[in-house]
Image (cartoon, rainbow, N blue to C red; front, side, top):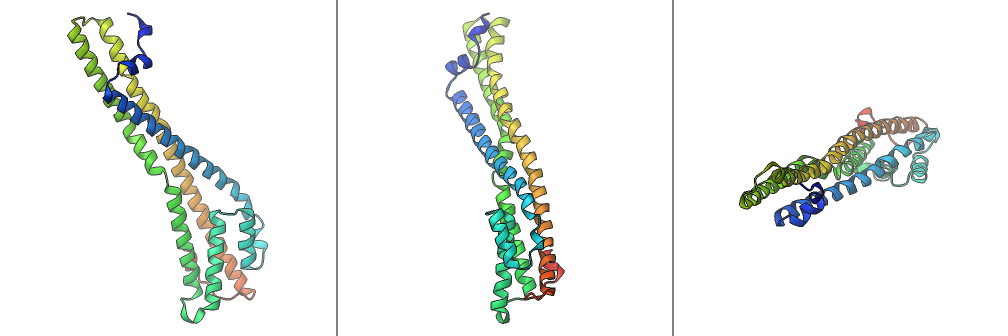
Length: 234
């Protein structure tokens, strides 16, 4: 048996439409998952670098100074967004306090809105990774079964059903299963890693929200505009 006659190139050359569609689908899934991995990985690295921006933040005395400092140090970060919306909510209450909910409710709404939007952004792409990780092995297995079936049919038609005639085409068809695993494994690992990163980021955001709430109450005691109860940060 000529071993060099079998391989990926031979499989592709001899493949029918079904095998080619399966291979193209797996390739597309791999490209999509690696795109999400690269994009999400960049976001995680950027978020990890933003930890230093909180140092010295609470030494400032006015809410506007905190929001401006965060915007300078970490423009576009969830911390800057949370501080900006919270300060805007307090300012809105100061301007229209008579006809609006109290400051506590305004701040609580800002916290919940930013946290919800940040959680939705962090979930982007995870559904794709989960889908690729769970379906790619089965798509590859389908390609293998289809390839083995047609290889056995061709061998049976030729009348040369010896081991050396069977092993090559069958082993060649198993490449599709390996391809499916090659696509699925990185997606599963990335899904788990990004899920953990999301939980850490959520905990950091909640900690920042509580610190911001405590700082606003301290600012109030120094002459700030409104009283904020503890449940605003919950």
